[in-house]
Length: 129
Image (tube, rainbow, N blue to C red; front, side, top):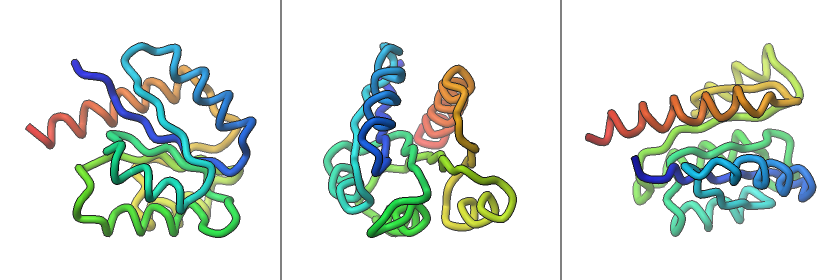
């Protein structure tokens, strides 16, 4: 199976680095990062992610706005997405309405995150075939 291209988006650089380090340990992932929604939009064009993992609370452009803009881009390959948030409930409804496939509440269990990434990537591969 080819590497799963994962785009991580978070405005907190330390969180971004830790997540990248942890996910990069899995040889089946190719991980790229973006520290803002606008950077994520740019990187998505060239990186063509299979899975986008984004924080919701970010300045300039929040995660929901980012996802709506990504979903509108017809030039992107089909991708799956995971919202990371400090809250569930109403925020989960909001992220799913914005186009996310999964909503996870921080702190994230990285084994669980890897399982979800693998499931989403497989669903994406099944749809693409």
